[in-house]
Length: 458
Ligand code: SAH
Ligand code: SF4
Image (tube, rainbow, N blue to C red; front, side):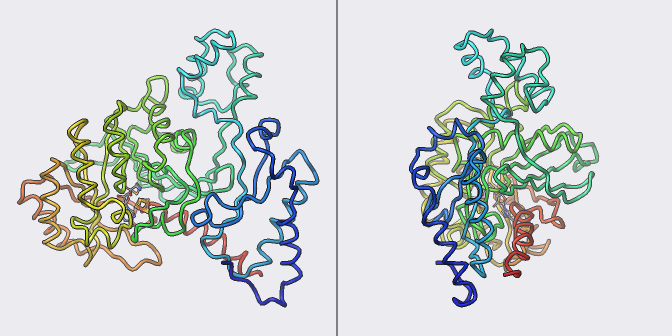
């Protein structure tokens, strides 16, 4: 599976590499992680392989900072790997996973914390004090929670980690769309976009500062036009990592965010449990306090999860990325359509709309692919069936992909056909075209440029 350099050039190094990886510390390798990890909060693992094809990757072993011998082994593997292989295929992954043996502070839910405090005999009103420190005063450690008893602070610090998310790059300026690239504790990269308040259509100031949040590292759904799917899926974000994107961006921009869209990297409904946890924190009065009507989840169309959402009580808005009004066109650009063709998907949407509320459709306009009059007429039929409003979005070009946006005249014609059929359709003059604002692009550019020198060195 791996492309290698000519055998003579590196066979000795490769032999050493294979010796290293095939003979890691067998006892520890077999040790069940949950039993070992709590004693070693700094445990991390090396994962070698393609997470999609050999999911969940081939876990070679894990190394502990506490153990110098293991640590030497881990560093050896890391050092040797780039020099063994000339071109690592893009799907190849060597990730150092810092096992999240302790949950992060910004994933705390008031009611769960109150229960756990009660169980250990502490006063449950402390839970509200703690969530105020985390979500209102935004402190990053229990040490700063000065009205808590020292003993409780120390106990909690052994159970929860401070959130770790570094800003690697920021693109754009303060008054336009800003794109922020974060490095997570396991070195993976994700991005968020801040769309600041700007004059609205009729001149009055808009009251919205929107953040576009990522829900996964990469994406497994591989839509043909999207940068996020180009390098496959690496892992799900946990609830705390989604919440932390908002907290970091508010800290960095000094602005209060009042609108959240899960339209960054990843398919949120493929990470439903963590998504719902994050939304609960974002929405709760004891959390970030953003109203359910200002939280939107976008999906590429996972029919079973759409039905599941219809059956549960959590409130937020749902947007469906349609991008094609017939199976033929949609299937050409969205592989997920093979799994859930329009008939299946729209029945799930009927169910959702009947049980819950309206949904919106996102429809990217791609020149020569889905922008014909015929597609507009078909789209109008679907929108009327579900009483859905449509957001038309001119395609953002992605480096290395062939697709482009239609002319302004074509975009407007498409919109006018929808309107003629009685459908509400807005045409977004989207922001951020010049800063790679389409989801996944900044990460892709950065990870490619970071990989380049390492590969050319060998
Ligand atoms: N996975 C989810 C949410 C993340 S993508 C989904 O697909 O809905 C958020 C939105 O960005 C989707 O509507 C997606 O189709 C759109 N998108 C992806 N790449 C884009 C691009 N290059 N230009 C414009 N929109 C894009
Ligand atoms: Fe994944 Fe959404 Fe991009 Fe499709 S559009 S690859 S589902 S992030």
